[in-house]
Length: 460
Image (cartoon, rainbow, N blue to C red; front, side, top):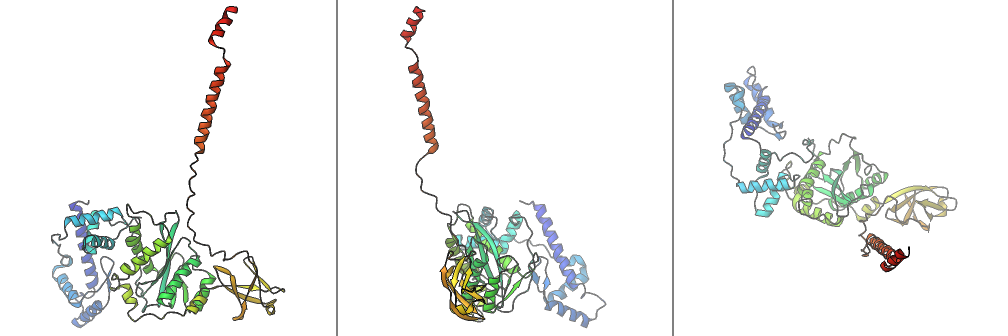
């Protein structure tokens, strides 16, 4: 635990930082060469906009406070801007703070917000998140698990729900079978509501599209989706889905993911408030994706969506629905959007090939390039289109593959085979022991009896 002298030094440095912020804010307006009218205009401008506070957060300062700081600086200089130290006695019981520290040490990834939630669920109440943050800072428990400094996120915000969704993937826990779970998620930039999500063990386009499709079906169609340049997001089938739904697909620059800070911040919340509880001491690992998905959906809908967001001050789902429920797409349009397509030239015998399968098509298409539209999980039903017009279903002629090569099933590891009870090494050991015993008996039989050895000695 930090010493008292160290704590006092930290408080003094913090107070000096506040004074520097105050001085930088009033420096121009405090110029004695300014007229009262000029100073009043500057102070009004300062009070009307946000400023980066000592802790990095955006703050607003009232006109009266700015005037008070200017008067203090004129009368006492820089030292007059240093805030007076507080000497308030702690009001939170020591046993509660000790329990909070124990919860933090038990799972270091728990945030102050999550520790507060656990305390509230356990005892019916909890100190404020800020109180817990200060307590953890005094104990040196606020360092992130990987030791990395906190990330800085941009302050851009979409003006309305479904104007912009930001998507990304989070690598999560290892399931009981040994496979790592991956979360695809889309976040509404305006409200911070989780619009679509899916847990999977495969980081590919088809699984990512599952999250996007679920979001569009329940939260409406976004105007833009903003994703990185990873392989799941740079795919012709995703481009087709966005084109059908009228979504603009935008990619961030590699290694410069500006604008995606909100989803990264959400993933930090997922780690600190959801995943941390899955890995808490004494909790058995989840058995499969279904259990993980059920637990995550319950957490999103009952905790994350209903808790006021630190930036907006509103619960995400409340802000998302402030203008009313979104307009949901037609089921037929949604199905069309997430069908896949491939272009093939029809042979002179009116057949096409698709991933080793042979299909018969309309003879009128012989020698022409046609579009094959299909569900990637079912290659037995393929529609043929020419210049955007349906030419009927392709007739399977020879089908070796029933799903697209990229539509790999998410199979759990097979259960261990039933034990036979046969211990091969034990059998070998017993066999060896039997052979040794047999050799010993044979050696005994090959020797003369003691009496015969004596007679032979006398004859010699």
